[in-house]
Image (cartoon, rainbow, N blue to C red):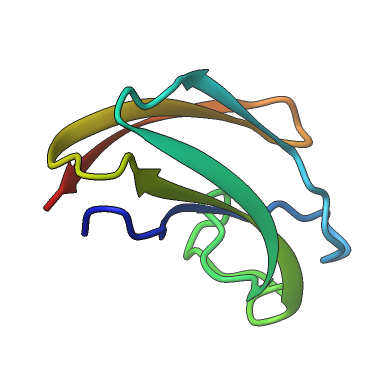
Length: 103
């Protein structure tokens, strides 16, 4: 909805011992019709994309996560886009393109 802050990205990174390992999130392109804010939130380790079945001994453990929130400019309705890059502790990079439909 227009003018409402909404979570759009949730990033967790951890070491083999299940302790948090923040990683890095970069904003590659800014939204043209809104603003992004970030915060640290309580979370749990879920699926691990590097594990065969997605689960490890860390699954279900509590961890701090990095959250990105989007809020449109006042009165804006339409489509907004932005791009975020995540850099893991291993140095791998993932780029996500976001399209937000503001009503």
